Length: 388
Image 1 (cartoon, rainbow, N blue to C red):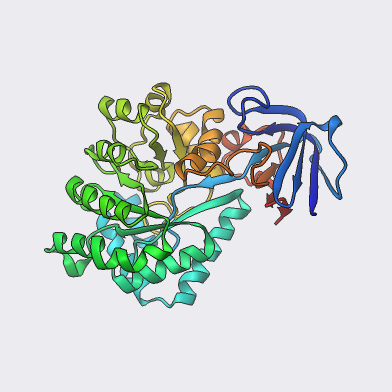
Image 2: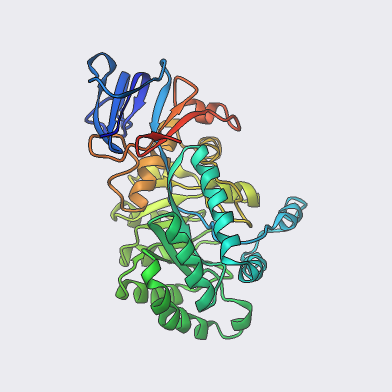
């Protein structure tokens, strides 16, 4: 049996209100024991059991590992020139995805795996211990299948996003492409995917097409999630709730009807502050969702076009500064909220029985994640109870 005890934790965030104060379940002067990768004890440090391996946190803060529930890591190349043009005044449009599609199709499996692995480890070193990875830069049966095979090597949270945009070769035949996604493509990729996703927005797929694709995925045994309302107000929230989507992501635009529907559902609203930051778009006001009781997550949306970052601490800082989260709400949304968006009960918190995935910060409080943006505050990351 492998044991690791972390003691003298100044402030332990468990995300279990029954264990401590506030929604974050905070325990001060705490300890945490991991055995064989699982949390087996939490409590006051002075009551901690003995263990083979002991880490002295020296009064620092310990938080659950970040759960990044929305990324696009299977791609080749970058779009730095597009970013530069956007910062010079050009507007963001979904069509830039086609450039990445061409580069991804031309790349080898080894190149795609190496790039995704690089980004995943980059995120791990900034505290991300659970990650979702989408396809969507292949948009052919062959390229979507290989993208998902690669994603599945890296995470159990692999998502089929064949409906990212309509590829160039189907430009005037969108409905034919939808039929391909719902039929032959879905049948070929489903062994390698847990989730199915659709980009339902201006320049991508209509609400009718979205419902058709998600319904086909559900019938094939995949779980639904959806990109929507990034570029304009749409009707996707109704579809997401109707079909029981685990999450609706982006949600830059929403109205009171959307809020009411989400508040009565189990669908998580996953906000992606990196996309607003990198496209110089308006940030949504998360207070309206949070005050209505909507479950909210924060994710990185790591992709080469509109949010080329793996940093969940940056997402927390942006959420607090520009989306009006409190530091507490932002941390919860980047950990427990992300876990709920992936329908996971074993991550995003540090209760007994959870995976021992956690981060020791260099500071005494999680508030510093927003208070000191751009500074690496991660002292140590433990994955399955082992320091990386």
